[in-house]
Each structure stands twice: as structure tokens, then as C-alpha cells.
Image (cartoon, rainbow, N blue to C red; front, top):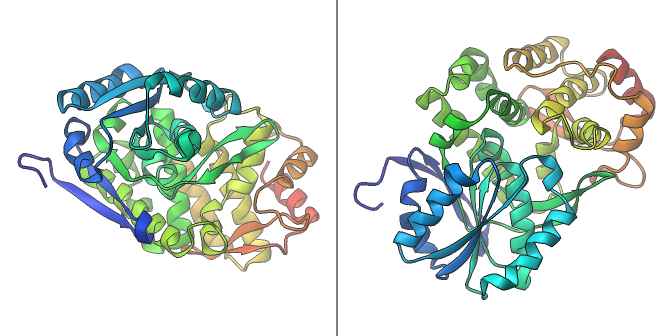
Length: 368
């Protein structure tokens, strides 16, 4: 570690020659050149961000890199899920030739999950693959979407239907960036934290029940614990199943319902974490019916989601028939059957295709 560098914690994602570090700590952006130097990237690259993050973090990062002799251009997209589209990807790709990039150049994503997925898709496809670095500035991105190499964009029919597996070379999770995150976005990020605990770590789940208010208050020790532990869990799962042929699918707990809600909302007015929160409540009800989850455990999950300030009921916004139809476009569907991540107990998840359309309809009615 370079002299004077702030104290950091590092989680390693073990993927052979594609292995990389997730660095968690405060003050990382100001010392980005020291973290990037070991990667031996080229001296020219592109920083992709959104309009909200550009002046706060992307431009200062460009200046910091310039001071270290690294030239980069900042390109922004409108903030929001609508930018995670083929239209924006095409716009970015058409701009890339003007930056005089070569195969040693790099792409840095600075923002939340939308930009991370979009920028990763651009990095994976331009010149058949440029080095990619994730600098997540939202809680959701720091604990989930920046780790694991899933990149891509949405189609009107569904989430993430166009994309690739393309691992970053480094993830820099600067906790200081969460200080400027709107409270609604912070709460939405907690949905992925709760999901991670529910599928893989009952001890973390119990810790969240006791400490979630400290996380919402951005207390440094609580925040560091949450981000590091979620990254450790995701790193373990990704290392065991990089391309989601088995275990990795458990990371989609709550997402089959949630993605359907997002698609039906046209990705407007409903944050990903809010959709996942409702989806987890539906999946918990399914788990009681189909996986032997105790009603008490399902109640604990709903209470924790509620304390996090997230929705626990679907309401009347979506028709049951429309949600069911949207779920059949889910990437986990096989041979026309929708597959769901269910909980045997808190901390233990599995994928099941034993759920019927009748189960889905009943659960959605109960969760209204």
C-alpha cells in the first residue's frame, strides 16, 4: 500500500487469470492512481458516468488521473434506469473512435448499477474488449452489481436481456461516495444487502436486524462491515459459478418477481431495490408454500425489509396476469418453466422449477 494511503479492506474474487480485487474504504477516489498502477493499464481511457455523478465524482477522478499522467475523457448519460438501453450503448460506442483508444486503453464506470452495467457492456464490446474498472457510488452497486462481471442492457420486454459476462480488473468501493446518495437510493441498496444475508448468511441477517439503523445513518464501522461482508459472499458465489450454471442463480432471490415489476413499469418510478424488496416478500411467501420456510422466518424477512423503509406489498399497480407473463421472459426460465429462488431457511437458498402458475397467482394476491 502506498505511503499515506487510507486504511482499506480488500476482498479477492478468485477467477484464475480473471481474478481481481474489491477495495473497500474511505478516500479511495483521491488515491485512484495508486490502486490502478498495478493493473498496467494504458495512458488513455474513458470514464462513463451519469449526469448527476459527473460533477461530483467523475470530473474530480479525471483530474486526479491527469495529475498522474493518465488522459481520460468523461462521457455521461442521463441518470436513471432508462439509460440502461441499446440506444445509450450505441451512442457511447459511436463516440469511442473519436477518443483514439487502443487495445491497452480502459473504461472506468463511475456511478451506480445502471452505469456500471452499461459501461461494462461497452467495455466488453468495443475493440473486442477493453480493460474495465468499476467505481460504484451507490450502496446497491457496491454490495452487488459492480461485482461478478454481469454487464448488459435492458430491452422493453425485460431486464438484462442483452449482455455478457465480463469481469472488471478492479472494483473501488469508496464509502465516502454514499454521503451524497439520496436516502431513497440508500434504502434501495439495502434490498440487495438483505437479499445477500437471506440467501447465504443467517448471522449477517441477525446482525442487520440489530444494526440496520446504523447502516442507514452511514456509521462507518457498520457500513464497512456490510459492504465487505456482502462482497465476500458474492465473491465466493461468483468464484464457484462464474457464468450462472448453478449456484450463482441464488443471487437472484426476489429478482424474478422484481424484474417483472420493473419491466411492466417501463423502468420508470420504481427503483430496482424497491422492486426486489417486493419480490423478496413474494418469494418468501412462495418459500413457505414450496420450500418449508417457517412462517416466522418469512415474517422476519418482511419486518427487516419494512424497517429498511422498503415496500413489502405489491398493491394494485400490476395485474397478476401481466406479472406472470413477464416472468416467463426471465433468463432463468427453462423449457417454458419459470424458475424461482426459494429459501429453506434464512441463510439457505436453492433454485426450484416446481412452482406452478397457480402458486404465482395465489402468492401475488396474498402479497397485495
